[in-house]
Image (cartoon, rainbow, N blue to C red; front, side):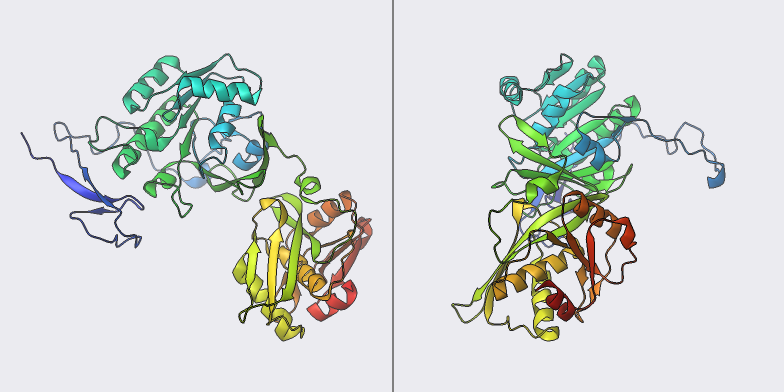
Length: 450
């Protein structure tokens, strides 16, 4: 019997080593190398070139063919995917446990008027049926369940069923007989993904893969998995809040700047058509430290409520804490306020929160963050009819923002009376019914606001 050839693979990044080492040199993680069998079929070699004849062609002569798409019942998912699901595409969706990945795909399977092949390696058919009954959606008579982890059996049933759409939950539970290692290892994930992608392309069937994530928030398995698939979606949100955000980290068929927002309710995931009206709370009295920022995700304007609390530091070192906002950027804004505008915030605790569990990195939030901090520091409430959109530079200037007209239109549509923006934005004032207050420096902004 021939001796099996083994190698050591990093379970974090997929790097291969001939012998075990304590630390992976590629990603720097410790104790992630696992020994796996390397199988080589030397009985018959594959031909060095493809049998299909290809020829060199000038790019000018190539005809641009628009990819046909399948519209899903979820408008939010269509927006993130760039207009729908492309035939033959492979989409990988990752997220924390319990965030709603399986629920999102099960709702999709129940609502689509297509033949769906739903494969689960984590739940039994009765568990999936119980969850489907709880969702109370339209029942799809062409949704077929298959609880199996063997890749060969799954592909055999898929070819026999000939579905229009395949969902696999999850890629880490699948196991191929060609690889002598346990499910979830680098070799298994790579081999199973290769075969699934090959099936999707040959049969022109779109496939959705669910992927687990590591403690760092990365999709578990080799990084090459994300390179192989066509679309990588990230489903995240604060589990203590109801809102879930669907973003595209990679999309070969559309933009990666779009965002989809869902609300987790007892009947499953509900689409949020206008998130601004839900994320802004209606207050009976005006309180200091609250402001409204006009942000934008892709082509979608959205209003967020910013809350700040500034108080005297009890301990020697003041605390700086932020939820949903970059803490390093918060420290930068506080330094600008102290250096350029003369506000004494060095000995005070500053707490910042974006309501609704939303996380965003739009630089246009800077002006609203500064407004909340100044309001809390001086204990002067900001009018609930004011909103803000502007980026702040290190010299204290208020810089122009992208897609300013869309932001102003959204604020006007929701009934705001005044918006503060940079005076460098070229905006036709007669076009809008909302009052546009142009500011250039933080000192000027403080005088205009209070």
